Length: 518
Image (cartoon, rainbow, N blue to C red):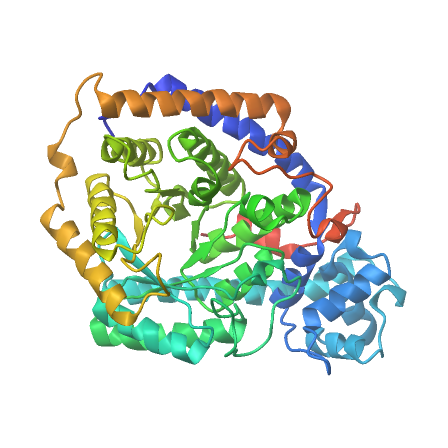
């Protein structure tokens, strides 16, 4: 891609190299550690599901039993495999016995690691094959029905009731939406377990559960047949259960997952060690499942100024890219995030927004960039808000964004009604159609406002990345370099759930998903 912004490829390469070094340093820590959420994910992928008599999820029951016996460093697959060898039971029966107090996994006689692997490996292969078939089924749907043109029109449903969400999601698809995001219930990211079954009483959103995923996937497949295009389903796997929810999404054929390496640390005060270890396994699963990840750089601009801190957005995109590559995610599945969040009273603000969006497109040419709408400066003036959203849509089509989360004209007043969403879809479709090739017809003035702004932001991002490379990512986060938020490496939620791996640690899914055919 020829740079319209006259970006220096040497500066881009330097920034990317610094980000690669940052990711490699952290990866050394990741490779030596596991977490309770990773091991609960392994338990789920081995087919264990359900709850005990007090509605505690069986994956939590099993892993808690392993933790109490000091066995987490060896991994859940090791202990379940050993129990299979010793008892002859399948994983689900073993979990149910543990829940009834009939079995203590870490007190059983120990079989050889070869026998453990022999017991576990066929089950792991079967699960991975199921995920592979889901990926193939998605591809078949798209080949037969087709899908919307990029930028995909992305809208949210957030009733708290999965059955009401279905009604709204199908209505949105009929109105023209390409991606339906089911917003999670407020603060679910801070729960260290995944609720079970269909739910109808969420707060500000609907709980992410495997049954809710199944219900919504079925509903979108039905409406997709009706409207004649594949409708993608999005949910959130950030938080304390990041890899578990990624696994649930892979098993139920979700298409898009909110999955940022730093979001939980900065905006939910989840321990940075826990989050960085968890994001790796969650991204391995998403990558293998063909799920597009969405990163959360737009969130920085809710706590920091979009003009002054634009370079931190770009720096984070570089870092997220490298972490994703480490986990086997191809560039085509990296929905790197950014946002149209500059103060609308800023003179020439539209030009600066255009520079930022074009810069992201040029630096990450294969990524289906996720572009977020104006929210910070939206007001009760719905007419002005609708114009702000229109300008946001215009930037998107000019710069070939991949995923367009539509702004709502009532953003600052109330949860949008169905007709508000219809107007937003109509706005985007009108602009996308009328300006489809506008960006292809435009070049930017040499040394002008747009070029100069993009070059300055890139240079500052490169300098920041080099600084982070010298100091280390943990130290950088402690100093509040992203979003103006400071976090301690030993503080936040979930640190107690991190453990150093033992020499015989076993997780067959990492090898199968990273080494299997993609």
